[in-house]
Image 1 (cartoon, chains in turn yellow, brown):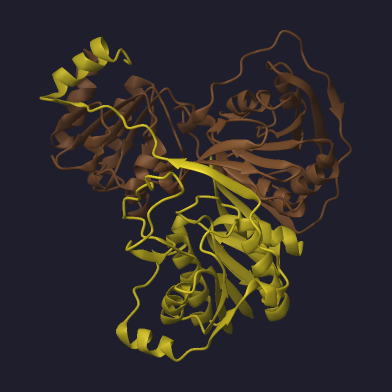
Image 2: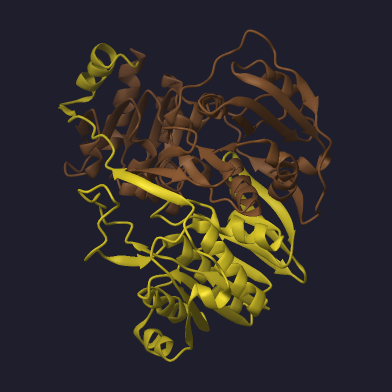
Length: 249
Length: 310
């Protein structure tokens, strides 16, 4: 079966982001960018399913700036077969992304779509669910395991109180949680091989999708800083502070 | 303004954080709460008593068991046009359903709001809480998830709101619920706890995490974990505090052997008092701590447990 995986290029999660002084957003110039960690898990899952003989072809797609081609190359170095980039402004909204992904799905007809549960830049946690909604497909969000058998899949979802087990009909959209797998490191030979794989670049117009934003960002500010703390010498002093100063125990 | 709130409940009562969402909803207009589930009439009665609730609509059917995102979203779509705002909690339950509703309505959802500025303008944290964005929506219906820790819980009202039965929506039959494995604990739930004791990679093993238990028991605290501790397999994911886990803001948060990665700070830096215990004097967690102790946790935690008992 064919699988479609989506990936997003984001600011590296270990970089401390800075809000621009004019309040229009965060600094992105000369900042290290990387594949969103949950998207990496999504790619890894597809590659493992291909290695297990369940999947025959992995199409990876991204929506965003032209530099997202690098992110697609990384996914192809991990094992995806070919890439599609829909080139847009970098801060396209989840609903528009979902519409663009749907347009590609209509053409590619995958049986399974794997997305990350959230991107660690805008923290929206929407796109996978929106893709499923637009297609009228089942969804299984925040999964920690998936086993495909015929036209269904058994999944385990991470929910607030523990785990939930579902059987979903295929085609379906699943979104990845942390414990689904541990993504592999890409090797140099695979990076070289990925350079030869097909990568198509499209514009939203070609797919007939309107990506006009629905939300207007009025301002972006830094959150209030916590005031400086106190170093305590030992456990006794800590307990005394908590009892007499903070009065929380 | 008419607000529809999608309640998360266990069949008997609301889950923690849902009354905080009602405080946010009250800023927007008259509140109707949807209670959908399997055998959940008791939950509807509990919801009716909460201050600010004007009406409760109850949809009780077997196909709303579990998370049931597809069926609950279809049910919401059946009544959505009567409302100006649709709110859900920013929990694994609400995050599963709300975007499905939003996309079906051709609406751009506003995720995890932390403040209501006006009927169309909201504040939401992005970049692991390192930036606060104020956004204005031009959509005809606003679909929103609410971060519980940003709002005070609503109290009990004077009169019980009326409960209407809502005919069940379609059973789409897209997914089949095969049960849930919920962690059983005598301790309070993470998002509802007054005190949390959290461990990180410094705990070293799943076995070592047990030294936090006597301390948590003595404080009546919930136990949490950093993503590094979950990644290392020390603790299950439902204990994870952080950008990609649970967002908490207890009165006292004790971080043990946690270095303080950006993604962890995102989940706990709104706690009232933060204590950090780490043997690394350079640990970034100290930058947000009110009190910090540079010490070996395997020495400090038993000492702290004992000190609290005396």
